[in-house]
Amino acid sequence: MEIIKFTIRVLPALWVIPFFLMSVFAGCDQPGPNSSVVDKKAHEIPFGYADQVKLAEADTTRIPARFKKGYVMLYRRDLPGLLFIVNARGEIVWYHEVDSAGFKVATYTSRSTILALLAPLSYPTSYGNEILELSLAGDTLLHLKKEEKGFDKTIHHEILYNPSGQLVTLTLEDRPFDLSRVGGSKNDTVRGDGILVMDRKGNKVWEWSVFDVFDPRKDPHILKDKGDWLHANSLSFDNDGNYLLSFYRVGEIWKIDAHTGKVIWKFGRGRDFQLRSGDWFTESHTVYKVDDDELVLFENGIRNNTSRVLTYRLDEFARTAILKDKMILPPNLYTERMGSAYSIDDSVELVCSAQAGSVVLINRQAGILWRLRTGFIPYRAAFIPGDSIHLPDPDHPSNSALLSNPDHLSNPAIKN
Image 1 (cartoon, rainbow, N blue to C red):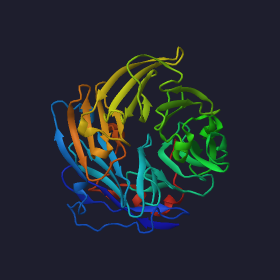
Image 2: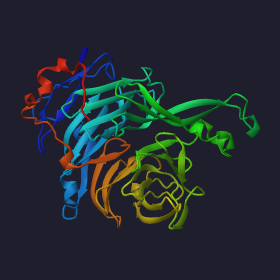
Image 3: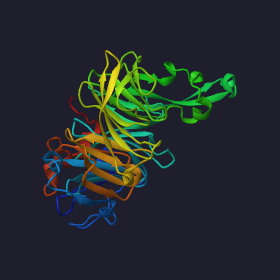
Image 4: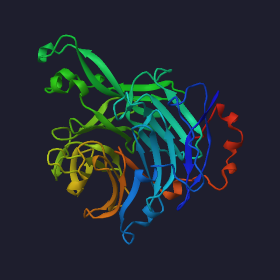
């Protein structure tokens, strides 16, 4: 067992006390060869960190109380990898740094932990080779690396827990195909996506591949798109436990049976649903259900250079849909790629406009209630309700039993 130092801070609302913790990796290497603690005096934020997030505007009279009590989590995918938790005043209250790997995507879990996908710069922006889970006390609860056990593929864009406490992520797969009949070569390669489910030890539990349900040779655009065929970029759970998988390149959302892998339906222009009112989306990110029949997505809007947050009401039995609501973002918040939208309440969304370097709270009339500017390109920004997060007390770090005896973390476990 090797004890590795990381940069962990828990910061009070208006000033900073450094909080140094030890993270333990049992039987595996740290995510980056030079992870370290930055030694700073009390009441200081490390140089340059405060400039990474800046509150640009806030209409305190209209910001929902739920948001005021909550937090926003965002992360940097470049080096050093940085993950921040920020309060409604735009103040950094917690951060974690990894020197040699970027945070490609991160999720705040129902266990009150942070589950992240990491990788060095040799990997594309949303793709990774390590899974790391952290407690808010900075303890490493899980660390898996590619090529160990069932972790046999590059993963990307998503890392989640399913209701059984198993890890769920998207995978990348290159498969050989004879594309000579459609103008390609006999020994061509198509890059597709899949779903991988592993237990917390990295053993493979279940996997699915798009190649098992869709022959790329039937796609008229395959020669143009074979290098990144459909580009899956979002995975979430429907209310019945099945998967909702977003494909950016074709503008489609697939519902996939979480047990059989069968495609239950495809939602998008020309697919299984008839749109009774409103218009279709083109590209999609961060697709999720808010009610049994309402589907929310962030649309990049390349066709019109206009990004939107769209809510569709789906009748899965009749295979019909209506566009219930649309929130059109102002031109300065257009983002061609990346981005996210998460509902705060019935009329307010937390939107990440990645390429604009902005995270905004916006109402249904496209009014900006709150805006955070970032010194990096944020892939997503997630809302953490105040009652679901319990930050360690920076004045009394010894209150955590995990800090007094790090050796007992050699086999960390989280109760379901």
